[in-house]
Image 1 (cartoon, rainbow, N blue to C red):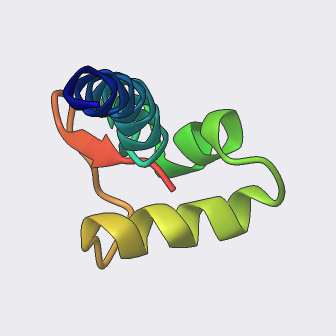
Image 2 (image 1 turned 180 degrees about the vertical axis):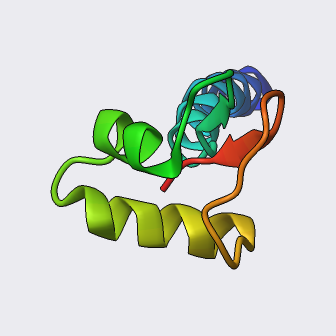
Length: 79
């Protein structure tokens, strides 16, 4: 009986380890490092499916930007 409980606990721990890793990866934020010549519009058009205007607005909102000024090397969280 004791061996059966140990086996069940080991299987449960193994399954938890597999599925816990997968759920963490899906919630990870995507980021983009700004390069020379980039604009919010070009980043939004390349990374946001849909209207780039909405992508620009979401980039500004997510990164606390009040304007369109970005600088090379800046790290942006993508929507």
